[in-house]
Image 1 (cartoon, protein in one colour):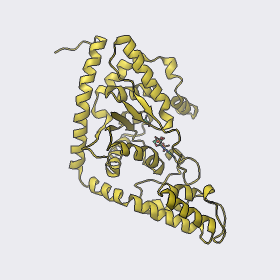
Image 2 (cartoon, protein in one colour):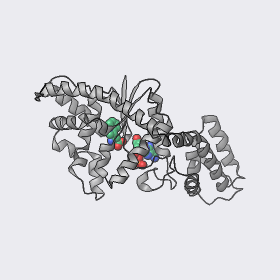
Image 3 (cartoon, protein in one colour):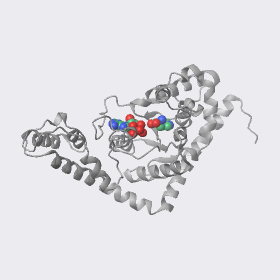
Amino acid sequence: MRILTGLQPSGKLHLGNYFSAISKILQYQNKADLFLFVANLHALTTFSSQKELEENTKSAILDLLALGVDPDKTTFWVQSDVPEVTELTWYLSQAITVSQLQLAHSFKDKVAKGFQPGAGLFTYPILMAADILLYSADKVPVGKDQKQHLEFARDIAERFNASFGECLKLPEPDIDENTATVPGVDGAKMSKSYKNTIDLFASEKEIKKAVMSIVSDSKGIEEPKNPDESIIFQIHSLFLNSSEQSVLKDKYKAGGIGYGDLKKSLLECILDHFAPFRNRRLEIEKDPAFVEEVMNKGKYKASQIARLKIQEIRKKLGIYQSI
Ligand code: ADP
Ligand code: TRP
């Protein structure tokens, strides 16, 4: 079973990304053939500068390796390292209509927010379909916001196969409809666009600042507190098993402990949980030769598959290939 997914290097990773997307992807590593890439070509659709794209891409590689991506088990590469994907995007663009692309929620949302879209943002779902179909993925784990893009990928594959002959595998979406939304420090969905995140690899000082800024009600130390209404509790519970959660709940309900101390205890929990990952990241960062070797290996493995598939597709289309 080949599981494939891509992560855009569009900013720093936060607790919301970790407890939904990343922890789930890492679980697949030991039970399936995982294909994971850093989607730097997609990030071009919201490009701000050469420096930022380059830094974010490198940072995403380090983050994912530090969090546990094992290059011996997982095919891990950077999207642009396998240029066949852009060639396939062009071929697939014959298998989807403009009116279908105009229905894309993510495109419409960005335009509604006043973003001036380039044609690349409009054709973004075709590049995503190419990512998936080039590697014949069986299953694609993504967040709920990507559901429609996966439907496009399936439609494109179906239409392509019907027109040019069976050659693209239809991917199954893997979407947890009930993955809890991790709240940000202000209680809204944690998201880098809302600037309410607790970032995984920020400095201890920055994490402390974020945790101490979590919004709470004005109950005094002695008063009983309602854990179900507390953002501090909601975030803390992500790190706890169910019996630890009920112990913490009882602490809230009993009173005698203030929000300041509850935040300190959450801070400790976050720092403890991520300490091994932070140390590992520092080690990897000091070893660029290791990172290069890992990324070369991923590029090689992904390229081998991509090359064969693109040849098959060119043949189906009647694309001239000189020998
Ligand atoms: P952001 O909203 O910060 O831009 P992304 O859109 O890059 O985050 O999200 C990457 C992945 O993390 C997606 O699968 C998304 O569903 C998941 N994710 C992001 N924020 C949260 C959150 N607050 N709670 C749960 N999952 C989240
Ligand atoms: N569009 C996805 C996101 O923003 C990232 C992505 C690019 C992706 N290509 C993909 C996800 C292929 C799964 C499969 O989250």
